[in-house]
Image (cartoon, rainbow, N blue to C red; front, side, top):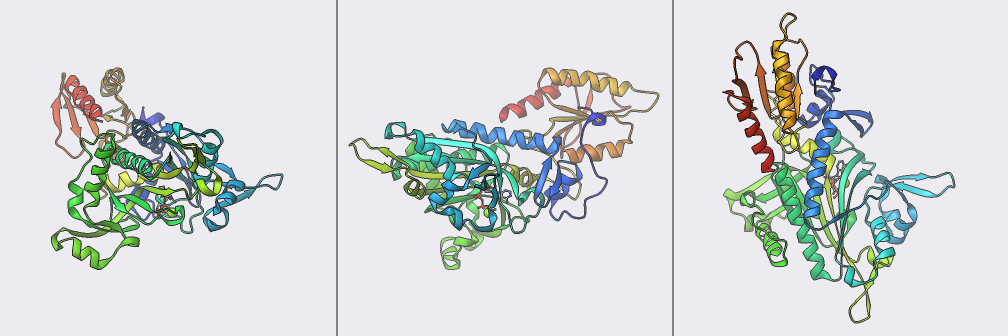
Length: 444
Ligand code: ATP
Ligand code: MG
């Protein structure tokens, strides 16, 4: 992509309305544009990043055997009346009427709709477990939309639902998602900590929020620092292995403020391991048994001929919020340098040729390099404008491709000025550059 032809409307200065760095950067570099309060359009740069995050989340859902579907954004109020949540959900639900005066709503979540889909087709325990997910826009009429896409009204969410024959199997499903979340966040280069959480309006009895640390986060957290050293390496998609993984995390005190208890915290965590801080909720998983299947009649035939209501869980990831969360974690706002993890970077590498009116040889060289990158599936952004060098660098630092090549007067022969953001510049040839980038991409 050439800067001159791109739709990346960069602002000279930070927009004054943005209070946190992700919102600042996203407006500054033209990733999003507000369309009305808490509702945004996604421009090419932001959309590219979000789609890459979505794809990673999708792959990790598929790996645990979840099947992708797509439910509509507009739902009928009927099923919400069946579950009893139509009245309970309150002002956050956007309620609308169609031309026949039927009560409809813009889905804030999909437990009812997916239960309706399930009950119409699945009749026997033999078809269980069922793990279904979709990635779709949600609408919640938040009382205080703020921080850009971090807390907005229309947002993009991956929500999954599990259906099982009994508690034991349902817990197995829950733990599969637990693993899938840890793996997805790791691929996004984020350390997301699972924390025991309240179940809120979704209801139920077992729940974890996945939180990444950030000063600007809205969740207060209390945790044992040692939890940060854990990972999911070696976990198998088997009951015992998954159970062990969850227990490994649960041995360390780690809760949000709703579950916080000072005495317990101080008793369970030694002083040097105590951490009170703030974080961003990027995912939330719940187990709630037959809370929806019972009122809505979601049951299956059991082996002995009896029937029972299926046991359900639901599992959300804030795909659009993750774009902001990654910026909160990775943006060096003092030096105005954003370095996207290669797994979601809008471009892998930027090329900055020094161009003046009489000499376009640097641009020609950039074009040649670009062709080689294309052959190797390396996504490139080239600054083909005749702006001065320092403003070109500034712009590319904000766009945040993790690698840069500068083609200037000093560039002679085969050696190129190459750097990974935040590291020293090296002089190496194109072949080596391609090797470095491909290696990093393959790690993911
Ligand atoms: P929060 O406490 O932040 O309001 P929630 O508990 O209401 O979140 P869930 O219903 O569990 O959220 O939704 C799953 C995920 O969707 C959340 O973990 C979060 O990442 C994302 N999410 C929820 N509300 C919003 C919002 N208003 N804007 C952007 N993302 C959101
Ligand atoms: Mg909420």
